Length: 242
Image 1 (cartoon, rainbow, N blue to C red):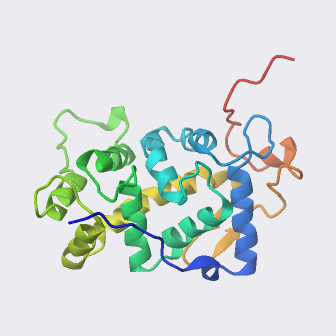
Image 2 (cartoon, rainbow, N blue to C red):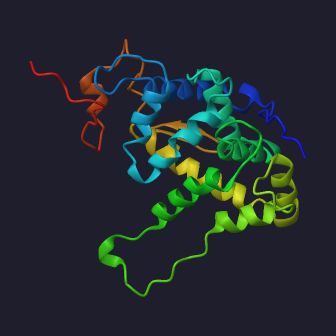
């Protein structure tokens, strides 16, 4: 069975209203803001990794997430790609969510997913559920790996790889649980990254709790960045000595 080219659903900007689009552009400006110089920079792999890297438990997912968003594969996430990703993640229909899930798994864009491709999601899920060391006990049971069971169920012809059709067949038989679980994990990562913006994106609203901050580099200042911050500033590199 040949590989299938996965294309995002045609939902476009109609999923968000004008005010919501303004707030989403603010999120994009924030993600393009270099954390040392506070100047605009491309949302490329280096910038993306610097954003995800502050959340150590989700750092293994950065490559899969970046590849899934960077639809044209040019190494830079533009606003249109960013918006298509959010449309599928937050307000996508069943087809769009399945396609996004598959793109997350298919990190080399060859149309097939192997066990190694979804292993990072298994690790990230385990990290998100891991208790602090002081709460752990030596007799704690190791939960069954949902992703391993999912892969085995999808791989009906036992060729050690699955394609989009295999995923869709699995969902028709077993439901959307694994798709929803995977995208929920991605939501946790993304929502954590943009938390400082005060912008909350849901399936029905895009709410800005810090409307006084304009995240464009021409408007931003150190005072406005940290006036409402609950965290110490995170730098991608040490500031140079004066």
